[in-house]
Image (cartoon, rainbow, N blue to C red):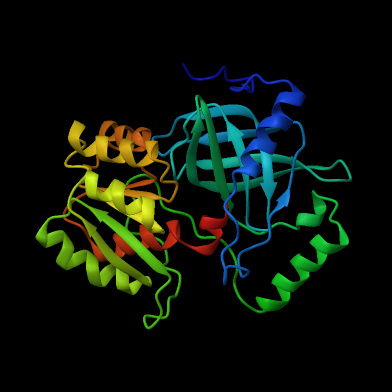
Length: 306
């Protein structure tokens, strides 16, 4: 049931102390920053008791929620929520500055990660950058981190590009990547020979190596011994077999983005893939532009640091 039109729904229903404990546990589980990743936008704890948001899903549904924020950067924020939110949903956040001024900040959901039970972590990329110091009182060390980042990226357009909805439309720009460099590996599960021949050069275009797993058992073994920036999974028209691969990866602790391919442009199929744990969906025949846009945005520095 959608929330009442005039009421912001708190889907977690936690006390203030329980919220703090939940955020603390999530922070403890964070992955350490890898070497060479200091170019990511600095993120800072942002922990008012709750913020009000309006979510407009790709299908047009509008929902009002009161959510628990976790952190904020110049380009986005992360919050904890008791429901799944579709990637690509428009998000209007009512944020209050340190001076008490309320402002509306527009963005898009770029990631929804299941944590436990009903708890999901949602990452939002702002349409326009904000001043972090309007919302967070930074320590001297935190201010230096922010200044170092701004100095490093001076004169560059550091605005965040979001994934364009569950179906990953062909619009959007692809972050520039030096084709001579490799940022990491992509795990491709149960691909057909035709998919492999197409996907391999496309992944190279966004700085990723192709690593093929013939089935879910091979994939589960590989993720225990190798780090992947993204997984590409053939969901076979959202068959139970295809969706089970996504579910097994998530159950095994695979936290990187998953792109589900061979998902028809049908709301039910897209919803099934996203509920199983995918971050984006692509229909066949695959197209290089929509594929590269989805993969590049999901593995961008801002996305992976969220």
